[in-house]
Length: 95
Length: 255
Image 1 (cartoon, rainbow over the protein chains, first blue to last red):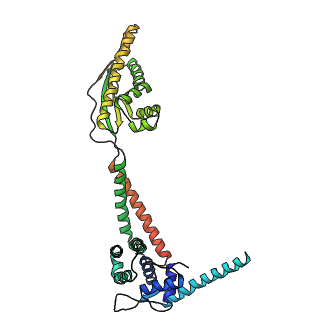
Image 2 (image 1 turned 180 degrees about the vertical axis):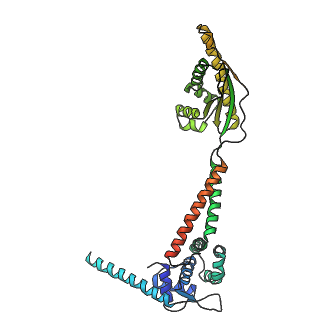
């Protein structure tokens, strides 16, 4: 699970976060430290596709939140990943 | 590293910086940039530039890149100069044609060309890597003997030699012409000693000294630039199509 977009969506599923908070959160739950370029590449794509939305902020650190479409997309992706994980586990048991 | 990362952040497209620039700068400051971050920001900027460029911008950039690349390649290609000399032979009958053919074979024989190569120290690089026979064969390909307007009175032909140095090309062309003329005298002397018929007498003269080429005949930079621009145009169109296709596959708008 190293696709930056899925990691970013997963991090936002917990609530609105700005870039640095997200970088720390992803490192905590996935063990991957995304670089600024990779993180904002994913943020740009996700916002363009309507999966996340930027909130107003008083300082430069703009938080982003998951949209309904983003939640649906994340659920679909997680379902696929879950199926892959279950299949791999089952096959490893019979190997 | 911090200053470099901030500088690299400026490589993102202007439209992107207008929307994300402030928060991106804040993230770079908070994350305490490392070399890995700097590389990541640079890669991100290049990717963002590639995805936000419009069709016309990609094609224009590719055309310019093609033109510049083709000119760089043409500068790396060795220049070639051709020196020429006009030689006249009389009379213009069949007997003269036969004698000229014999002379040409003699002047362009491997022994004769090997002697010219050594006298003028031609093809020093090739001689270090190849056999003398191979170098002679290459030299033969660089010599042209072309008859022009033959008639019963006179046969005129042009001897040309193609080399990387114009002055050397001129010297060698003069030497080849001398070998035609001297070879003709010797052949005439031999025929006289052997009491051969007088109709086999051939008069040979160079009308002018060999030309000193000023401009190279190759590489043709204009032709290479045209090819480069055309290749850049095709590559730009292909890149735009791939870019559009990739963005459509990712569910993103066309730039």
